[in-house]
Structures are given as C-alpha cells and as structure tokens.
Amino acid sequence: MVTLLWGIVFALLAACCYATAAGLQHRVVSEGTRELRWLARQPRWLLGLAAQAVGGALHVAALVAAPLVVVQPLNASAIGLTVLASVVVGGARPDRTTVVAVLTTMAGVATFVVFAARAAVHVGISAHAQGRLMVLAAVATAVVIMAARAARGRSRGPVFALAAGVCFGLASALVRSVVDGAGGWALPALGIAIAVTLGLWCVQQGYAHGRPETVVACQTVADPLVGVAVGACLLGEFPHADGLTLCGAFAGAVLTVTGVVLLARRRVSRATLAY
Image (cartoon, rainbow, N blue to C red):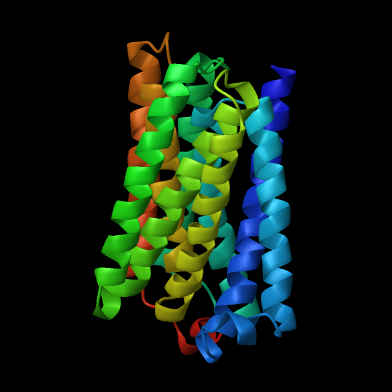
C-alpha cells in the first residue's frame, strides 16, 4: 500500500510538471515559428522541455511503484492545473463553466483511481505479452501520426494532441514492460524513444494550432484510455475486478471525459488566450 501511495504521489507531481510545460511551450510556439532550430534558442521553450523531462522521470518512478491502470489516469490532473495556470497568468476570472469543468474532471480522476486501486495488481509481463505490446505500439503509433498529418482546419490541433496522448500512453506501457518484463529491454527501450519523440512533436504541433488547455485535455484523455486499456486487457493488471470496481471506474471515466469536453468547448477571454 505504501508503494502504491508513492506511485500516486509521483504521478501527481508529474502532472504538475506537464501542466507547467504546457503553459511555457504554448506561448512560444503560438507566437513564433515551429522550426526546431528556432525553438531550441528560446529560453521559455527550453524551460518547458526541462519540465517535461522532469515530469517524464517522475512518471517512470510512478510506473515502477504502481500499476499502469492507476498511474495513467492521474495524468488528467494536468488538465485542471493548466486551465488554472492560464487563468492566473492571463489575469482572467474563471467563469462558471470553467469551474464546473475543472471540478468534474478532477472528481472523475479521483473516483477512477480510488476504485482502480482496489483491484489493480502489479504483475510481471511475459515475453509473449511484451511482443504483442510492441506490435500494437508500432501499428497504433503509425495510424495516429498519419491521421494527425491528414487533419485540417480547427481539428488539426486536437487531433495532434490525441495522437500525442496515444504515443505517450503506449510509451508508458512499454516502460512497464521494461520494468517488469521477461522479454528483454533493448527493443522496448527503442520503442519508448520513438514513441516519446513522436509524442513531443505532436504536442508542439497541437500547441501551434490550439489552446494549451485543449491540447492538454485531448492528450490526457487519450493517454489514460490507452494506458488503462493496455494495462487491463494486455498486461493483466485487473485480474480480480468485481462489479463495484468496474462500475466505479466507469463512472470516474465518464466524469473525466465530461469535464474535458466542457473545457474544450468553453469560451475563452482574450486575457486567457494571451497565455
């Protein structure tokens, strides 16, 4: 139980880092070019990259301490943190829709994690399961990247953010396979590097075409959904889930998605957009 609690703490700290990175990098990408050489010379963008790196390290620590189905949903905490940061920095007063959306999202995350923690187990991963995970990661990553590149207009930012979420969710699953897997670490490590690199690129594309809270919202919905699905169905982290656990987890997921949809559709003031 103590190890599980440490995993939850590490995951929440990682969410804080991701929210900080979103605010820092969005402002740079939205005001300038998306070329990597230009971005690499911007202190704010580099600071955001450092925040992402720290968040990634904390996320790995969380995955070592707790099951994937518990850690991944906590990433959604970054949504509320990003919205609150944009409101504070932009000097805008949050409207009722924003407050309700943030509270709904956070309540959904808390509900899901509480019920998931009742039945989740930290299991070893067989070489066979690791191999299937590698195939799934390769195919899914290719599909979402192609879909994001094909998107046009206002949907381009959210679609790139969804693609980033899928990449990060798969990368987290591969991290779990490295930590407790029996099939070696070299190939999964390569998969992690590719998935994270593509995910970071998709995030920058999302910031260039959408608001930071919308990008984080789409990303952190896709990320836990992929992580939980892989953890429960492929890695076997939910072997003894009863009806109460499943109903509670489902209710938490519905609340989280509802809050994210409200955030994505809310009206934003000019002060907030300046963030």
